[in-house]
Image 1: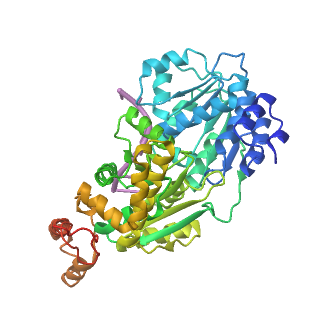
Image 2: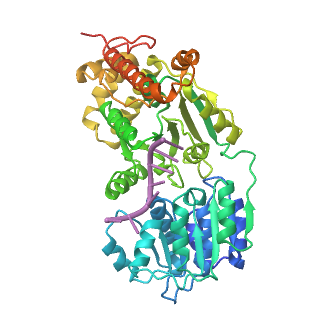
Image 3: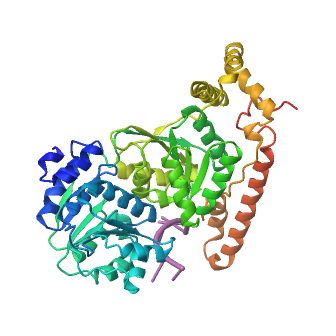
Amino acid sequence: MKFSELNLDSSLLQAVTEAGFTEATPIQSETIPLVLSGVDVIGQAQTGTGKTASFGLPVLQTVNVDNPNVQALVISPTRELAVQTQEELHRLGKYRHVKVQAVYGGSDIRRQIKQLRNHPQIVVGTPGRLLDHIKRHTLKLEHVQKVVLDEADEMLDMGFVEDIENILKTVPSTHQTLLYSATMPKPIMRIAEKFMQEPKVVQIKSKELTADKIEQYMVRSKEFEKFNLMTRLFDVQQPELALVFGRTKRRVDELTRGLKARGYNAEGIHGDLSQQKRMSVLRQFKAGKLTYLVATDVAARGLDISGVSHVYNYDIPQDPDSYVHRIGRTGRAGRSGISVTFVSPNEMSYLRSIEQLTHVRMLPLKPPTDAQALVGQVGAAKAEIAKGLQSGKLAKFETAAADLLEEYDAATLVELLLQSYSKDPESIPVKITPERPLPNRNSRDRNSKSRGRRYNGHGGGNRDRRSNNNYRRNRSNSSHSSRGPRSGSQGFKIRHKD
DNA sequence: AAAAAAC
């Protein structure tokens, strides 16, 4: 269906056309008329199918621009998503002159209070800060007619339910509720029953939960080798933009440090960083000034960044839903994408439950050899040089560079380069805290079986401590060996020059 | 179990 057939105001259609869209996606064609008719709507569709516009357009249409009160409220699970939604609503509503304001934590509340005095008709916010404004009486919701719960599966997760309930208490009971979600687990349906009145459910049927434009791969690897395997993949795949997911904030920090040390254009994003840092990193990534964005699940949901060609699950998500969201950051808006998930032997059960949910078997990917990684690096270097020559930045080196590229084959050139920089990537130590070992594993189980379980309370702590020590010893061994040849993995060819 | 979200 075309947008022009959806009874939308010409000012909105103009903005849609300017954004480059003519054909509405299924979720948009189905929900826009429903939202316009005023009923409560539950919309479920794959990520990347234009959910924001499917509530945004009808909400923008029904807002009265001559009325200075807040008439619509959009609640988002993360700050970045709130900002993104505000930007998109602003873009779509600019010819209708609708004022849209985002409010979220981590940024100056006084500035937000001033902005709220500017009479926005639509407010987009995260739960905590919305409540803060409500308590300060700097945000009044008594004229709100439409409430949108965006990415509701995440938001209605435990902890948020109460916040949302408290926010909704200040909204007139006659309001229309719109709930959008990529997945629709049972708790959501219960919540929907509680907050909504005879909602119409629009479920966009898709054979697969994950977009088929995403090629999904997995790499079997031990914890200690993941880092090197992943960087080799980077060299071979040369992603345009890549999202790299780690399980914890700390691991994201360490991964980022490690990637930077090896010369990759990487930055991290997670909830412990200042909001300023979070925004600036995201801005750089969106502008293509940053190639690798290392993230916790803060970046897993909803974020729409064009050009994300690869998603790497450095740590496999334990929650299968989270996998669907993470890889949904690529393969958006009709483009294709690639995801690679690293799986260690004790994580096979997570892999199974993910595949059960998505009904897609991840293809085993053979990690590239050092030689292949080298060729990838050379290709990238050549492209860089070519770009530099083209832009004129390297004009004065033009003949010299051309000669070099003529004279040497790829591997030799890289060897020369590395020698001159004395920068052998794998010699740069990278420390990443290992995942804690899962309890009750192999050898300990076997030992304890014959002894029986009755000593449980007593011996448990001891056994755990022992296993930790073992683990630490293993780690220090492997970090030693990163200086010399490592058993089981071939070293970098150009390493042993000294 | 971690992450996210208010100061």
